[in-house]
Length: 305
Image (cartoon, rainbow, N blue to C red):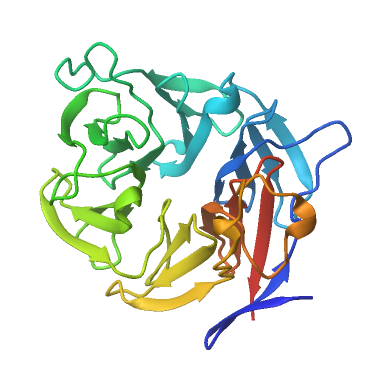
């Protein structure tokens, strides 16, 4: 078995995690999360956009909500009345909240902001995060680079952003997360094309940047005091409580430079190197599950030693 990492972060690699029954296939794997019972939900562009596995990768079930090639972000929220999934469709420009078996309980389309989404201006949401008070935040990563805040019932509260590189502006805010590692909740945005994290208060006031150690950050997941980030350019980055670099995992400095990336044949993959990490989650045992943006899907499990 291959290994990955250094120091206190050494992992055994479980390649090809997630076994599908005959006749089922994955499309591009985008988002992954785990519920309180240890079931893993994978959002992908295949016929069934949500596929559910157990901890060992055995198939449990799957379902479709009609997203198709727009299937993208997935966030699992533990709320007062149960657990829910927030899913984004970049193609149709919508966000849905569902039960864990796929029943839609809330659906939102284009925000009613004529100055932002006028004629010919695309809305393409990529990720969702939920704050401790129940408000949720949607990032328009592939559209106009805005962040939209809603109450739990879908009522719009505020929006901020726009395209640019100065504080408060973004270039593909691809992922979003509410970070509580230091007590006060903060909004972390994966400002992907600017190769940085941008951090805001819950009401959208810019606080600071984290930069210089990221390469197309896609989204976030916290486990203990550490922040886990899939860098699309072929690695996973872990930061400490102060957002200082702990380790890069599985880095392949050449993979993303190859012609046709990430649509390269799977025969070129190495178990201990990533191609295009796009989403991840960490389970209660500290194992990392990475979903990669490749045409046939790829999930890798890293078991911490």
